[in-house]
Image (cartoon, rainbow, N blue to C red):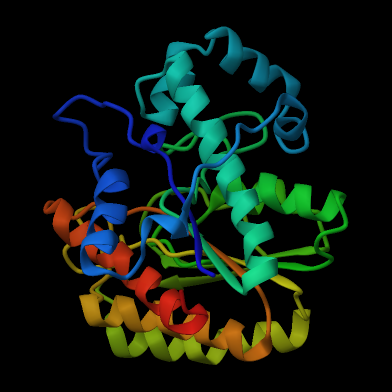
Length: 301
């Protein structure tokens, strides 16, 4: 059974001029349902992340500022979203959705969220449209509850997951692999366990060749029993924040490679969406939908 986390709460109102394509969170499940890739039975509404769960990863001071609405203007600008109690609640649902996807992935092999991938969230602050760090929180919960022993984070968003790298810097049970644009945000990149930096204009052939030569090797060397996959579609040539040159077909082949390799090794995978900033939101949505189609082919109904 393919289980997909989704909630209308994922789509919060932002100013029409805002560069974050919030509408994609409603459009992704709509497209998948219209195509018959999924049915309503595949969708589940996540639970709210608790305060105790937040504090496994984020500092008490940062959480206090979020829940009391006392972030400074500078801290809010760093996050880049209009802050409100409703937004913080949204982020709590998104973060717990990633953890619940991990549990479903352990049962069925693959599970996906229509949101998530907030890899710029640090323990003590947010940035880059990220408030909490969903993959790090979910990883810490899995490890603390004995639901995983060794976690591989595969981050293929075009932007390096600086929050992931920082939070997991001294955790030997989590291996953070990020393949991203070299000359792109964040401009200060704390080291992940493995960073592969790509030149501007990198296209399908080079990108897929590098990934094919890296992912199986990491699985052999690190021996993870769980994988988080950040399937950002800001690698597309059409992306206004990306600087890489992947075609839609190349992006879909990337998703197929990651999920197929994990499936072949019998490692459960939870997939989160990450970024996507093409001018045409339909392009962003089509980019994201590819990974759901691959998952459906591997897992079935």
